[in-house]
Each structure stands twice: as C-alpha cells, then as structure tokens.
Image 1 (cartoon, rainbow, N blue to C red):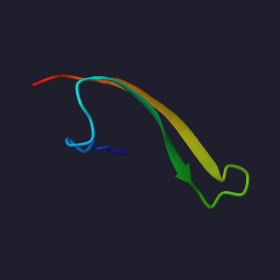
Image 2 (tube, one colour; image 1 turned 135 degrees about the vertical axis):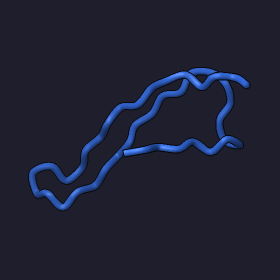
Image 3 (cartoon, rainbow, N blue to C red; image 1 turned 30 degrees about the vertical axis):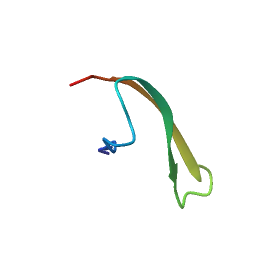
Length: 42
C-alpha cells in the first residue's frame, strides 16, 4: 500500500493516525494499522 499526503493539508512536524481497511472476511471485517512519522520541512 502506498499512502500520499495532501501537501496543503499537512505541515512539518510529527504525524500520527490509523489506516482503516474494511474487508469481506467474516472473522476480520476491519483491519486497523497504526501509522506514525515525521513530516520534514522544505
């Protein structure tokens, strides 16, 4: 999976969130993956 951030929505500094994936699997209908990082300045 490749995620792209919208430049006009983020600025330099820490970023933290969750990627939520909905599946058709009855046992695992939702997969949540924590994501964190640091946006570098120009």
